[in-house]
Length: 223
Image (cartoon, rainbow, N blue to C red; front, side, top):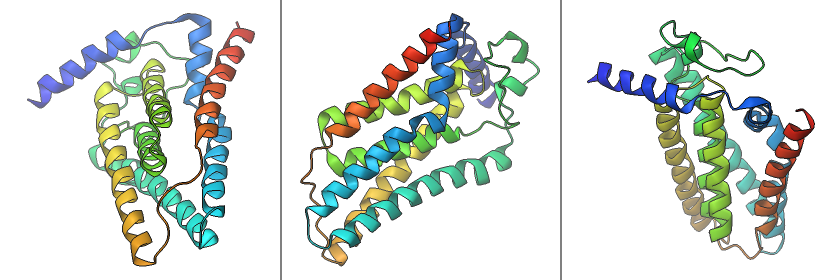
């Protein structure tokens, strides 16, 4: 069974990873960097502050939102990179002798030795689920899910994660984001902190699309 799944993972990797040319190389490489999403993260924090400022116990709620955001990131990152990767020790496709020479890489980036599970997938889906559960706006949910999916695919395009790494990292991220939200709501009920959101999270959705536009413009400039 494991050999069959591994073989399927290799085949999917070879099908999904390809040389998309200079534009796609620059686009996916830029999108995959955590630092390029900092403006989005700042806007998310700003919207959390705006929402907290309109309610009672505003500072307690804002600090609680920041704390749970940090905890979800910490759990997804530490479980994936600190526990699962060194335990499973599955080589990345970029380090697997049987497949590494058949893949397309960008800027000679190959990542670390182990890739299961994908920390990118876990972190991005953890944040996406957490933010989506907080604000519950359809446009925001679609934007955050697309943010996570694009980040996940970028790791396959760059040749540093198998689809299986991504799928399992996604499951981990969804679980951490959802459990984090459940713990947050229970904590709010325990200390009588308002859970409802009274602010429009549209700035988050807008910043997501502006970020994609910026990545595309950057890729065109670097052709």
